[in-house]
Length: 510
Image (cartoon, rainbow, N blue to C red):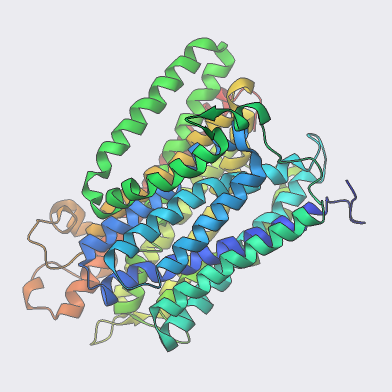
């Protein structure tokens, strides 16, 4: 395969732009989704949080299936094309104002993402030799593409949605997906991928069942899965059954693996489970960003120069600014032999997440008579917990392949991504505590927890009924952020104490 002069495969840059525009479509739609449900469809906050959480969790569940089918049968290229087409169709269907199309569109995007997301990364990895020193640099460039898309999309899609209507914003997201497919097709036409990513098992792909090839059955069954997933998103209250089913299945496989590996590998598997549990808590709090934090910004933040949907760009924007400095930081700390261990980085990530959400809680102290808080707190909170993400997310991704027994790397990577699946599910549960107007007692507003939240926010539940609706809503948001920010902080501090023991269990992996 021909190389560019700085040593990377040409395919990297086609995949960079394909992923950039795919992420543009994904994050553009996501920035609008919660506001679209609450403002246009007039769903209650509870209903909106439930739909959003189920959508978010399933988006991270389907890549387990899409990755497996690509690995064993259809290959990365066909999976990427199938996924991209489905996602483009889903985004354009959101432009049709009807509940059937709404839930159907979300389901199509979920299925499409399952084929696209895992396999474009796998195709990129296949372009490099296993020990190529440029591999990490290539993935860093690729990761920048993800965040450029995630930064631009909320700004542009929200601008279009505000000026011309919601469906124009969704339509722009669909155009972004088509642009990503265009770059991928250009790469294929130019043969920049060489012989990588082709059909994995030609014989099985062409094998016929009921007169139809297995490869075509995969497409058919993907389309047939859409109504079932749409029903699951609509009746999101039943998602807990899916959570239990997947958990029991994963535990059964982990126990089987645990029994079949060496003592050292057993120890490392325990670390995998530990890291995944910490990451689940991290994402459960972190993923308030697309749901309750977006509504908080819309209702209770004095926004200057940004709409609520556009605040979704803060996280990716900060990652773009921080990526190179963090790369230099890890290199420098390694050179002076002060680079923290992975367990310590996880702990620091959780502590910073906690401080970020405590900052959101503190914002209530700046509230004016209209219950509007200063935007500075919102920006500062995003910055702090984005730094926390830099400590945890890329580190966890890098360690999974090292901690996994060699025969089970793909499965262990799937377990790691399940932290996002569980995280989105629990994020929905957390977001529901911010709902105002339901009759359920809120355990976060009474007793020791309520007293602690009052210490952070300066707002008390006493006399809540006499507050204006705006202050009641502000109280609900900042109380949740103060409580769960504190929880993340304490878990991070406990993780610091456990870090030396966890490091020993990693047996030489730092």
